[in-house]
Length: 74
Image 1 (spheres, rainbow, N blue to C red):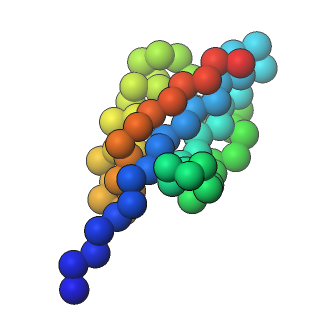
Image 2 (cartoon, one colour):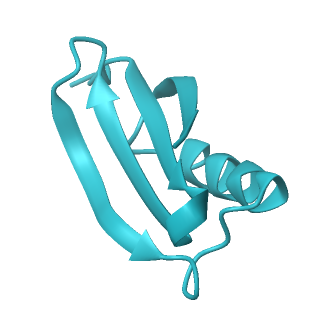
């Protein structure tokens, strides 16, 4: 049986003033598939380089088909 994954979108919400980061994945209809929750940046890197690394890592996971990435700096 051949399974085709739906297209998905990775969304970063970066709260720079509060040093917080939320990452979540939706389908293209904006239904949330996975949500990291709001994380303190003491545990995650929310710099541009850190977001690039998160994006690369999450796109490489075979159970997600991330075709679009959105970064919201709040």
